Amino acid sequence: MRDDLLARVQGRLELFAAESSPEIVLANDAVLEVMGLRSELLDRGGAGSGHAGRRWEPGFQR
View (tube, rainbow, N blue to C red):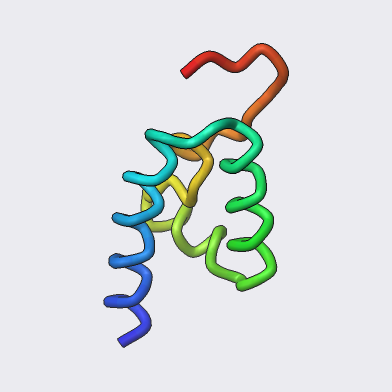
């Protein structure tokens, strides 16, 4: 069940991250971290919300 939930969350976050501002991506990363899901998603090869696992940095271009 948890694997199914992680797969669904991962897919939705990847879609969302592709259309989001860097500030929203950072906020999503923080929420995932608090939920304890971000590291699991990254371990699975998922992006979490951080644009393919990369955290936003000043000057980041989509």
